[in-house]
Amino acid sequence: MMNTGYDIEINGLGVRHNNSWVLRGFDLKVLPGEKVALSGPSGSGKSTVLKCVMGLVEPQEGSISVQGRALNAHSIWSLRHQLAYVAQEPDLGTGTPRQALESAFAYKANVGLRDNLKKLPVLAERFKLSESLLDKESVSLSGGEKQRFALVAALLLERPIILLDEVSSALDKVNKQVVVDFIQEAVDTTVVSVAHDPDWLSFAERVVHLDIKANIPEVSDE
Image (cartoon, rainbow, N blue to C red; front, side):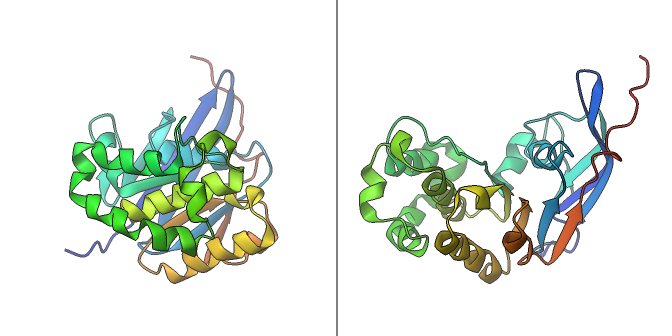
């Protein structure tokens, strides 16, 4: 059945670190296939939003739903099969990118998609990643190369929702355009990205601005 609701729905999200609110009262609704960029000054909670959706950060307030299912301790592991998170510098492990990509299909939930590895050469070429890089030690790769391999992994695993955290910061102009072209062509893929780069923001269908002053009110006594 086609999902006619939101791919991501966030209501009243609040995250506190030590004695300060990093984020509070944040709402966001993202339709399937929509391309949304989160913008705002450092410290406004942009990356925190993505980490909350991935279940990497537990909010103190509010709720998150992914494809109509509430995100909580019971649902997070199954919901992560719908999500891909590309950090500023993805951790590909200590081996090679090829080993990292192949190891993802050792998990029970991904075994049925193992034939997708046949698409690896084409996807690597699409993202301007030479075949030699597949067998190079991951620790020696640039940040931009790691990010593009993380995107390849998301496609091989058929993740319908991709969260991108400042990916444009490690990409030169040519490779940034390669990633932007992919995102614009992936009409069925939902993308939520965090960025400061005006060029990157220009491709988004919608830009949501986070205000640092609005998101850090006084902490109430407990």
